[in-house]
Image (cartoon, rainbow, N blue to C red):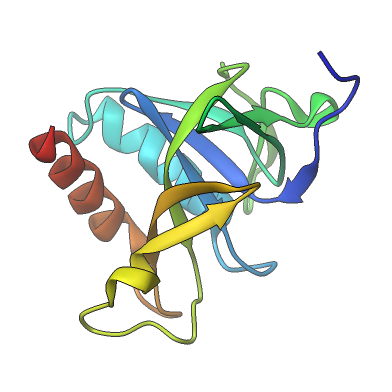
Length: 151
């Protein structure tokens, strides 16, 4: 196992069996969406959700899958705007099933197949672009539920 994996500025939440990797510029709402997904599971909108990492995560391509881990210095911590840094239970590693790009300025009403795929470290992953000003939570829940229905 390598001493360190490449780190990116993103957050990740294990939602069901796969992780949601949340990317976007500073202030786009990555932490807010992470917290909202965790709360949605508590309310029954999702079967399960647990933090993987907030603000910075490590990625690794392995056997055709994209793995995400928390950055060691931030493991188990999430920023809640107005409250500060809070500690939460976290998953040490998860397989990414969906990439959410917040504040995407190029989002189409009906995205093309190319817009709904991301390639990270040579691994293709389903992608959900979310336009700035749009609440991402309902879109992410719909994307997660539709992937469950797809099998």
